[in-house]
Image (tube, chains in turn yellow, blue):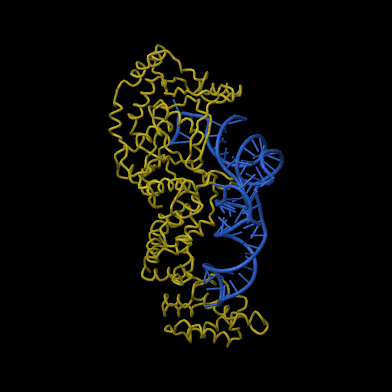
Amino acid sequence: MDYQLLANRLFPQQSYSKEDLDARFPLRNLPNGAKVTRLGPSPTGFIHLGNLYGAFVDERLAHQSDGIFYLRIEDTDEKRLVEGAVDMIIDSLSFFGISFDEGATKTGDQGNYGPYSQSLRKDLYHFYVKQLVTQGLAYPCFLTEDEISQIRQDQETTKANPGIYGKYALHRELTMDQIENNLMKGLSYTIRLKSGGNHDLPQDLIRYIKVEDGIRGNLSMPENNQDVVILKANGMPTYHFAHVVDDYLMRTTHVVRGEEWLSSLPIHVELFEKLGFDLPVYCHTAQLMKLDENGNKRKLSKRKDPELSLGYYQEQGYHPLAIREYLLTLLNSNFEEWRILNPQASCDDFPFTTEKMSASGALFDINKLNDVSKDCLVRIPANELVDFLIEWAALYNQNAWNVLNDHRQILEAILDLGRNDAKPRKDFISASQIFDFIRYFFDRYFSIEEPLPTEVSREDAAEILNRYAITYNHADDQSAWFEKIRTITSDLGYAVRPKDFKNSPDQYKGHVGHVSTVIRLALVGRSQSPDLWEIQQILGEAKSIERIKKAAF
RNA sequence: GGCCCCAUGGUCAAGCGGUCAAGACACCGCCCUUUCACGGCGGUAACCCGGGUUCGAUUCCCGGUGGGGUCACCA
């Protein structure tokens, strides 16, 4: 068999030489130890927390080492393309703080190693496929779908391993005449790798590949024996082939991907070898998991878990930093410890390592996210929080936006309530939750939502408010203000000190807390809120008195 | 089914041959307190099983079990 002849017949146009490509994709000029990583989403229009989880690893590895992090669009499957998906992916990632140094952008490619969409790199893949064919390491396969499923059925009945390999690789040794004949008939074909692996051997003779994974350490698996498709009938490469060619040409040093790729690692190792490329460092991350209906862990799924889509967290108004820090706590077990020691530092200063990454899948935990978010938001200055809130409302809650925008000048004070003490309040989790938390400030969203405490009768409530209104002086400082509440408390037969009521509940109707609750209900509509005096200061004298006078139980 | 990965409290996890087996979240008390939040103190709760190796295994090896992943002209 004249492989050169076959190669020229299959790929008549000789587009490149090795030298051309080496010149076009030179070794990167980077500092020692710089890592080059990439994110390779396929534009299916959906991206979830798990994707972001992996993206952070890429991003940290590259940016921590003064390397390059680039975006490559893996669009080799035109059946799954979704309109606008690329822009959506870029927008979501950017919202969550993932920025690329090169690659695809919304306005076209940026960088010298492009094109950064695989669909535009066909000629490059063809060059390397042709090289393999020339060397007798790949061949055209004319097997139809039906024939392949027939093979699979045979394998099922004989309990053989599925796939095209060994004696099942029917077109492996076609003669040039047979191939020519098929070509003349216009039969469609794929190009398959002629795998050098063999599993039909006694156990101890099967060769194993050994790879040192950046996260998992030494990995050992049986070598590949499958004649995998590397070029589809439509001339597009499969993931396997595109991955190997691109990561070589783009000079990727670290390939970060989910553990679901572990089982195809032998294929990639063989491809790297046959193409004469050095292997990058693989980092197979554990997957983010979720508890399914039966209480079992399950990999995040696009279809089943819409609440885990990035869009969901944007809608809820989680702050990108909170998501980032939460993911970091899952990614590196020592992050939380570091955060406690460095409360004010940017999380970008955290020394991230793949060695600290867990090899087992973590369950997504909304409780933990919320807790991280509270700590995260308390570090964000109120003026920035105002912008964040308003931007969120503009996109996801128009009614809220109208109100927030109208009260912009008091928003900062509202968001800063109780946040400047030594022990700042941590009330905020997400934009939607913040809005719900502060909405009583706005008449449109204010109403008395909870009943009186059982200790206070309706008559007493009316009298409390009556006296409160009469003695109200907006200029009172906090202690003068509270002194007046104490007076009302004792005048009406309630205990000024909660302890007194606790110790002798028969002597009092209730205590100062119950009296305050009445005032709180009148002012904010709820039995719980930050400091009332401060709220009144923000509300203003007129509105405070108005609410006190209007309140009815 | 083959192959691969994983296995410490409810969750995330330290640990890397000798520990009373950290810590965080959640939960439960108590304290602080005009409510809530914050904060402080305390508490419930874990090394999947069986063999080895060893003076000694949560830790190393083997075998199970369990969970996950993967076996496409999808990535």
